[in-house]
Image 1 (cartoon, rainbow, N blue to C red):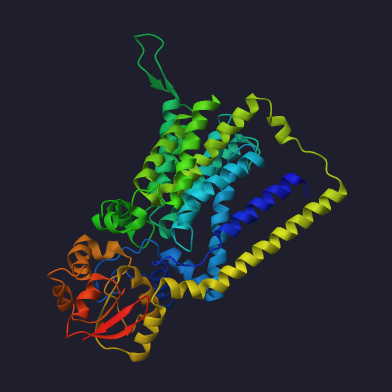
Image 2: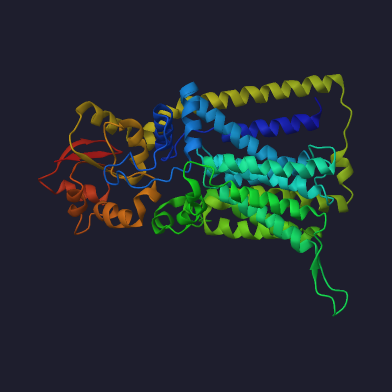
Length: 503
């Protein structure tokens, strides 16, 4: 094993180790229960089945295939299998990004680590990770398509086909991939946006300006790959309804973007707060990319410019868009850095394949073995800690109490705990609310759930309207303070994390 290969292997093992983490996403639990329901009933619900407040209300189950996958993995190997599987998905995502980068392994891995760190706050066992994987595959295939007709920075390294025609034909893979994506997550719309940007960039790049005032500008399309990509885009657009929700999926991604409640109350929809350390890598990645563009002297394509500017804006507007910006920016940053290195004559030294002695090969394998052992140890620690994380993040003991006492009556619960309660209590109990903000709608969240939770003057009305007799919330919640003053309500359970009141 050469030092270059050792370096690459160590990097991806380290990336995998970074991606191995305990399950703490509050929405994970209802995804898991939804997948179980689909598999056991062999049907996909189109109306809410988990709550007593919105039972029967339309539910666009846009992540149904991801939920089936999550539960299938869980059924095979419980939480350890899920943790390892999604760490693998995250690692594969960045392998596709790495394939688009020049300067392998030293420059590319350094830049990729930068990008991975920027996306790390969003990692976990989440359907969104599948969307990020598909976005990286789309970008990879479209880069290969682009390289089939123009010389590109990663032409010799990212190619998986030997001829330009073979690479160009790979773009048709986007159509079956789109069918999969639209059934996995509503983030499929990113795929359409990415194709549209490549198509627009190609069209404008082939715009022929007039040579005299008499000739109008034209676009040369004869036998041009632009036609091919336009057909692929139309085909991808046409297959969107091939999902259980049909043509609804055309508009669903945009409905979530206009939800007041999601924008106001779901943290990852907020703009990144650069005072928080978790957003610092995104800030540095953005600044490093801008600095490299200013200093390297290498021009970027129109397609790269649109993607970079568009998703930089999206990332600044909402933290959930940072990962897509990172996988777009990383190859561009690596290209600019590698060009700067080449202009100074340092590239040959970094790219040189030095001969290694037998002793060095053995030493490299020994180092790799040590790294593998360290990664295995990390995996073991995370898996062993999963139960502790569950009890630290969610009201596990309080739910144990509910199951034991079998308290009668409808339940009111905190928003972030709804998914966990669905996993632990459904179908015996339904929740008041959970993380499916699209199902509940802005009016319910603001005028019903929050009216009670905030403990204002009219806090009793939502509880009476839903015939609530059991309340499970945080001890310090405003509603808990109000309930403590009421003779009608009795505290039957309390720990540092949760309190239960009944009437």
